[in-house]
Image (cartoon, rainbow, N blue to C red; front, side, top):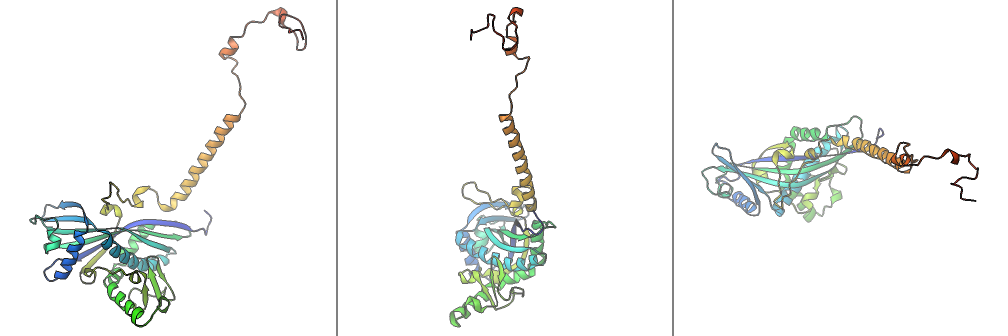
Length: 326
């Protein structure tokens, strides 16, 4: 790779969202919404920590997953776009994969869904698996896995605010579009899972009301408990969350576990491997077409009969028992 050439980079991350009080008695409507989401979900596994709490994990259904994943990817992309730009990396896209809901309940509750559905759960946690893609021009080479995870964990306050205020901002956007005739170009910036574009790209768009959300325009809203009960946010490796799809035996594997090489190293390693294969091919080809030599000590030579001295003559001389008469 020449200096100035662009290098693509990809990593996988799990954004973990912690909620408190969703199932409390003061939130009957939120409790109903959560119960409905669990009814559409697929149970993955259940664990008793031995200290009085059982945690059940669910893979959310397509409808619930689409809304949460799309909104979360867009809010995260806005934050990462600015953070990565500061170190010379361009964000290409944030692609959501799966969403898992973990619901905790007292171990005395016999129902696997009763804690979340009936108000017994102490807390809920959402984990959204996403692929983060970007590009930059080395050198120097970067540890994209670390940079993405560290950037998220340093910007949790902004991301949390963006998620909590998303529905409110979306309602304002819809009012401008539907009642005041606004179009996408009338907003200072446009945000999507690819980051921020428009004349307000270099501004802090997470808090402004002059931002056009692509997710909002597509009809996606975050669950109501994002506004009221979202507490903590943390970025983890996908392998730490163990996303599993209950479709056959398919398991979602993060890129970080798939190859063991940093993304920047894959190109040079692949080039060296290709060169080795090319050299091996040349050697095999030359051997196949090269001159064939007979070992003077081979069995064929040893089986040749002795020549009588009378039959020995110079090349071109006639006569002897071996002469064909020509």
